[in-house]
Length: 214
Image (cartoon, rainbow, N blue to C red; front, side, top):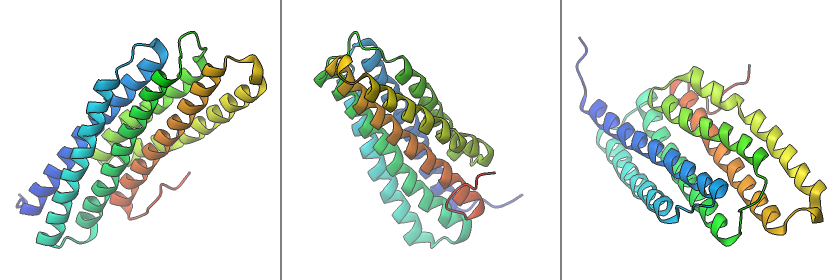
């Protein structure tokens, strides 16, 4: 039976914070997009979640620095702590972009807009954000690879939606055109951060900074 090290306890606590951040990021993103699709704005809820993510990022950063200074970890232990630092940033950015999406639904009227293709992209990105959190907590490289592979689908839908916006041009309702373009960009950025988190799983498990495509 292996002896549990004090460092293990600290890392477990650090990953617990990351797990809480992952759940908050998913919820913020989900509520923000509901505001776009339904017109029922949840700005205060999303703002609160975004703030919680910012505070938890600071908490995780302080703990990570403390663990490095106290235990001077190397190899996998160090990679795990460094990855938590990076992932906390990625999750906080997802919270920030979720708030931006929610604010967009207030500044630009979205009721009556046809966001059916945007919804297709949202479903994929939501899956990526939800599953990559699990992949990181459990250090599941196979799941991380599945998330990373979805980036090609995101790019294809992004290009298709953007092409459609350009083709419709003046025929489209200007507020719908503006809102669709802004939300589209935020969705792409959120997907990017999900991919960065997937890469962090690879870094922990293999030492490689990026998942290799098969």
